[in-house]
Image (cartoon, rainbow, N blue to C red):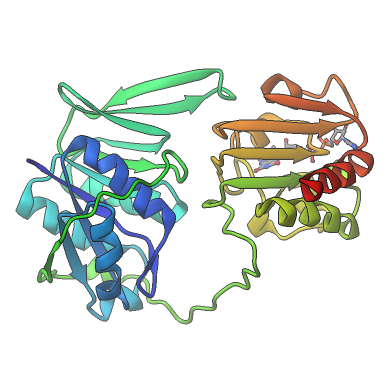
Length: 318
Ligand code: FAD
């Protein structure tokens, strides 16, 4: 069976959920081979085997720490040339998309980013993307070279399929492009107790209707009651009420959780671009004509300062 190369996102060996989702999707297409770079890569092996990685390529050379995405590009392109995979899957995150684009260029292959689903087709993997505020689904297939596909986090629930992986430490030659940018320092952002925005099953976002930085405490309360991440519209971020790292949308982060709760957000097209693929969308807005209701599965027309505390109370009661 053809190998499917999966680029693994991890932190010191702790495999991030999007990588497990990619392994789950890869099993539909062939035999998943995980590609893990950086310190702690060895420690990721057990988890990757549990989620069906038949092979794990461990690349822990110092270059993987010292430079940005290019070492991953060298590793994927050289492994692809060696094993002739049926596809290469990466997370559709900013780093993942940059890596995917560079790999596709090196391999002279077609590239698909922001996929929300991947299935096996007669002539290779078939992907789906969501377009025009989730009113259209675009079905695509790469027709040239090895399909390079970047898949959005939360595209599918990760499903275990335990195997004992073969671990290999391939020799990767890091070219001049790998050294073009050197990392000066890395500082872990304080994450607190809440899940990462792109990985969260539930996201609770606040917009201009939240009306002040101090009122985001209410949005955080709802998020904590649901075990959710906190998002914000650009209006809220531009007003300085919440950090840009939490902005959802075209110029922020793109999320695709099981549940997205938008409070005091009108639903501008640029905001939709970042959340329209969420499985279930709930909107709380005092304006019944707000465009967010065109997209929402459930809508509450009301004042968020009345609705959200009642929501917290009800969830805590159950
Ligand atoms: P508004 O549009 O002002 O809506 C506020 C909503 O809150 C209203 O619908 C109102 O009825 C409701 N409301 C007010 N008070 C209450 C209350 N007490 N209870 C309940 N509801 C209440 N935006 C993004 O979000 N993300 C992006 O990445 C992004 N990128 C952009 C890129 C470009 C190039 C451009 C031009 C714009 C971008 N924008 C982005 C901005 C976008 O166009 C909107 O301006 C922005 O999304 C509006 O944010 P909002 O919905 O919070 O505010």
